Image (tube, rainbow, N blue to C red; front, top):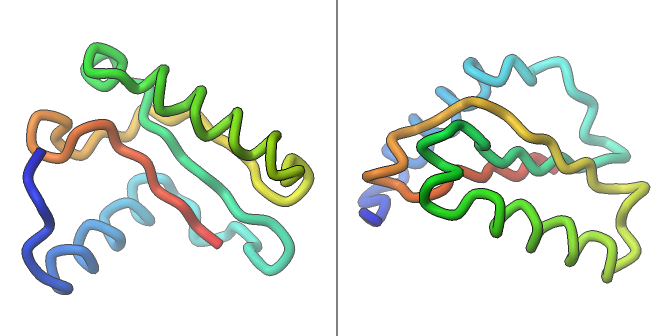
Length: 89
């Protein structure tokens, strides 16, 4: 997995994610969202384990009413970035 090398690269990735997920309309004032890419190429490198880990921790922390876990097909080059997960809060 390649590291993000600059703030601009991170910002660019975030902006692309917002466009691709079409989540600009989400109200994060009382709820956070965790998006995990479950496209075949992500599942092949462990997305199901990542999703399960988020799910387990959200439940363990008692946050099921405050955090929504969402499967998505958005993929940002898993060979370069690994399993894709984005948190909006």
